Image (cartoon, rainbow, N blue to C red; front, top):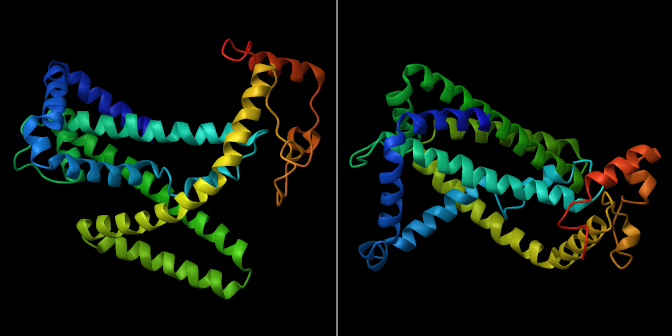
Length: 279
């Protein structure tokens, strides 16, 4: 879905290739100009950027780890790197292509429509009416998959806390009410409510990140050491004997399953790169 959106954006930018230079000039002059900084607009820009960044990639909110924790990998750092890649993909690619779609298609933003309508107008003005349908399908799929994903996060957390069926039923009712309310409420109300809730999530989760950071760095050190040794990194709880409460990662056989010698050698060769081959 995101790749389809990126493709539409690249087509728009290619059709307005003559506007790329002026757009870069506009971005830097309006972001770092004297009037913008002195007029305290930079603080508003940063605040808006942080809020939209949280909404786009959810970094630091503690939501994506629910999905990452269910992935089957041989070392937790592998999934951590995948989760990190998602932040760069969402922010640097998806958000940036949206900005370029608007800026190359709508040189004068004075009086332009706010929100997603601005992106829709930019796409339709360049590619035609069919792009509005394509964008609607992409947005629907992204929204629908996000609803399912967040529902799963909540359900898995509730089942971890309690197994009472009444609690899960009540949660499902609240989800339906929230989806219905969000579909008919005004955009400003939805954005402000989402920003407030995500701010509370971030404050809570950053405390957990701080407490777990020591373990994360130790895991990264172990992962790097195994890569340098030319191994496909495998983690077992014996590598962190002082950490209690680890319910899986029992031993290498249960983590990887039975692997024949030829496959193990091929994996080792794959993970022996120039960065980690020598100290």
